[in-house]
Image (cartoon, rainbow, N blue to C red; front, side, top):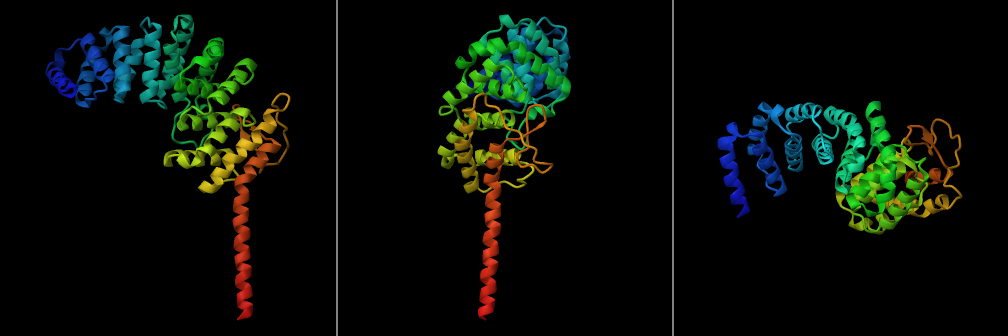
Length: 373
């Protein structure tokens, strides 16, 4: 019934799109997206009409239109570009700022347009932050996570924030420091997806010096590790390995993956393999097989408490030379190493050496057979 209703509305809107006003365009796109009904032909015609009258849009109409398009996965780069330019001169409320930033990050996470939106909108969001509702803050945090590639299926780079332009990195880092008191107060009440976004951007943007928030993050990750979806477990593990591999939280996340290893989907196994390679680079150049991957998860789960239980979680640095197995990139891009990380990295590499030994034994057996002949 709903399908026929929305199809009838779409046909009528397509017929009258030329005369549609700002409110009609925004309301139609918002209603279709809220109902989960996608009609890209209609959206294409309505966005063309919107471009002709973009300067007449009010802030609420503009943000509702962009939110609706992004929710439906509809991308028209020209419209988003012009809409962002128009928003610069508008007085945006909390919901409008959050929706515009989220919409850009949702459909164009790695685009220069979205990075420009981050630099331009975050100071305006900070100026009105006290008026933001939790849902609006969640939208902002989810947007920042997308910009930092938290949800990317490619886990070959541990910290996606480090490849952002300096101005974008600095804008996000400054905003997160500003928002720290709010995060400390609300971290334990955040829904799963927003919690994961907040923790990941916290780790990616080098906020470890904030001791209280770091402690809360650690406690909450451990407390939630058995209830989070596997996709979010992987995102959190990636973020924590990039910043503080020696933590109880890593132990809990890796233990969860080991316990549920047989139930992981092929995409999750692929991401976990990429994560292992990224963490062990340059020693490991190709993904491990599933048996070694499982062993790696177990090793992370068993080894991490030894470090986490030390007086302050400090790492013991050693100079291993240019080919150090313990070198891993921290949030500042500098190499960090620990004796325990060396052991973890050897857990995968040892398998390769064992295979080589087996091959040598096989060769010896072949030689013995030749001698018998």
